[in-house]
Image (cartoon, rainbow, N blue to C red; front, side):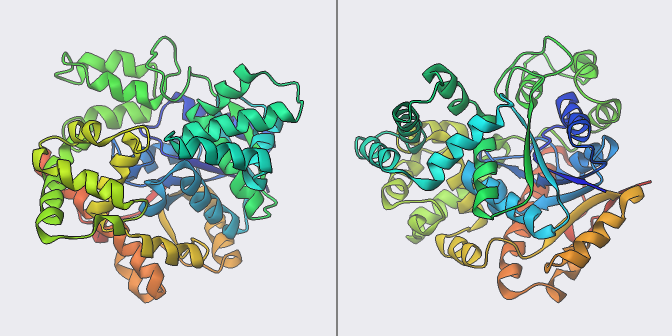
Length: 426
């Protein structure tokens, strides 16, 4: 039997995700799916809209057989490390045949070409990249220009418009990073790009049965949404029926969760760092200039989004700033990252749920991978290495903060992570 790997956030799970799973099975002939899913925090540097167990339940109801959590340190990271952490996990399972992902283009050859340019860092690419960086451009913009120039010099029959479209499409950027990560691993996993059915990751369109997770989250933010009935009819055409049921039952009970819900926690951390002379530059992905900028502006903090807008610049983008604030909350440092990288990124598989019909997948992972499967958080100390415990502790602390925010916001008692049960469907 063949097995598909999918890397996702499912935030929330919608018809496009269900389409991806169906199409992936159709394209590959595989009948089993392992999802590596972000937990309670997501790649753009924000808390997940809905908690990880609810999203796991939707995923298993709609075609995923096993859901493994992507550790928070990778889930809240740049596209490169998000992809590399997740791909390393799939690769080291030694049961995955295909990596399938939704993308704005299904031209896998072009995505692979761009990946090769980035990995090999040919002279044109490297020189152009450094030139733009030295002139104050963001890394993303500098890399975009370097890729464009490198492709133009190769004389390939690809328009600049096509390349720019790819480099400005979030899922295409991730696709390039997935392919790059597979190449760095010398992986035999075959990448499969499946064209998205909606208008893209950042689209706010709700015009058909397929809408992005961003569009669905935006729907909730409208001032007129006082009760779930205000949006139920619209959502009914955008998400599977089981997901709709959960969304209705738990609206303003356990979700929605937004970055503003973390204002007090982040504000407290900023004050603590300012008055204790903590070194923000020790945080992963931070620089002395960025740390100084945060400390200088922290006195005026009252809202996280407003603070990020004040801090960002062409060099320090809002997404990067948002991630740094979460690293500050989680106490995730450069030293931590260096250790994880040195150890090749993976220590364990945190199991969130599975379908009993394909429970043999778990046996396959257990027998073919050198890393333990954690099904009960309370048992982790017995099976993890010292550095694995550090990664897991960061995750547990991040989850405890997320739980605290939900309970404070909605007055609803959630079980602690150590008490949570696996999602198991028959």
